[in-house]
Amino acid sequence: MAASTDAEWAAKLARINKSKDVFKSGVTRSWEWRETQLKQFLKFLDNEKQAIFDAIKADLGRPHLELTIEWMNMKNAVNFMLKNGKSMMKDEKVSGGMMNMTNSLYRHPEPLGTVLIMGAWNYPFDLCLNPLVGAIGAGCTAIVKPSEVAKSSSKMIYDVLPKYLDPDAFPVFVEGPEGATKMLKERYDLIFFTGGTKIGKIVYKAAAEHLTPCVLELGGQNPCWVDDGYDLNLAAKRILFGKVINSGQICIAPNYLLCTKSTRDRLVPELKKIFSEFYPEGPKISDCYSGKMVTERHYKRLVGLLGKTKGKVVHGGNFDEKTCFIEPTVVTDVTMDDILMEEELFGPILPIVTVDNFDDALSKVHSLEKPLAAYCFAHDKKIINRWVSEVSSGGMCINDTIMHISPETLPFGGVGESGIGAYHGKASFHTFSHYKSVMDVGTPQFLLKRRSAPYSNDPANSSQFEWLLKQ
Image (cartoon, rainbow, N blue to C red; front, side, top):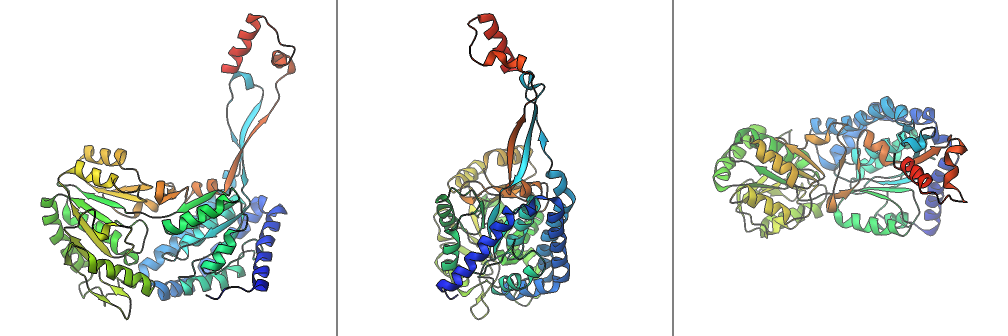
């Protein structure tokens, strides 16, 4: 993508400043304005549904059901905000003890201001526009930057979204690395970034120049424990669903499996069986699997990892450079120092790490950074409880994969290197709001006279005042 000239960047900067001016005007503070924008958002989703599908299909080659899932995630977010946004704008009353018995104490939600939203290419609409729903509901204006890697999707957002939303309040920018770097030098009231940890650190460092708060939705090496006593056919089916959706290009996909040798020997045949059930005619010609890596660079990275692994490919392993296609692949005999375990795979490769027991599995999980998601397949409640309490992760799903991000009542976000902050449902409103603590004083002065000079040296009077403060 060609770099902007000085004149072009000046024009872009003017659009950023215009968005800030819209917020400063106060128009976004009313529910009526927010509601109008949210209803326009719904029109965008409904009227442009096929165009959205076509754009994602061009970028990632997804099957129809997966296209629908991304579209529905956005629609659910808008409907939730339309239903609950007005009530979330209300002050939250709190108590303050006897000292404040005649005072009014509350937390007042106010919009943060003008925010920068930087989306990711793997879900080019949802990961860019779902956070935007939260910004609109909270009363912010937003600079919207979809990922330039998903070329068709970012172009569609750039061309079409401003026809529905206020283009001054929500300008769209499609920028490469140089343009994004310039954008990060500007001051915002929040930066919401979705992407890899490496770029996330660059964003965080840039934000520090202005003490700008950040929400970083990153990724990680998501572990998946398969317990000895679990139904392995069911486990295989649910694990593969999570691994092959969007051809493995999803930040919450199970990155590697952990199980004992006896479980592995029984699990691998079940994985092969489920593969044949999923794709009876073969994944390359199946309408239910894309296998298309988003770019040639991403394709070559994954093929290179497969070529260097010391593990054993027991299923799949085929690829096609012309179409950037990679078949779902299972690799056994993978150790923690294998090249497949150096970073998040972000593709349809599933390493299996053999462990001695559950404690050994936990030890290996703890040797890596905190993941965005963690999965456990077990019937034993003691195993499940230990997994929940001893594995730190952004989110978790027991006896399934992926699905924990679907309820609007469960905030989605990372921890440690997998991210900072969360959104979805009420969490989206909270993320783009500041809850201002307010005390409206109505206490009669005679109750407070002992707090002001001249102070009384009478211990009895001091004790009474201390007692009031403690209540």
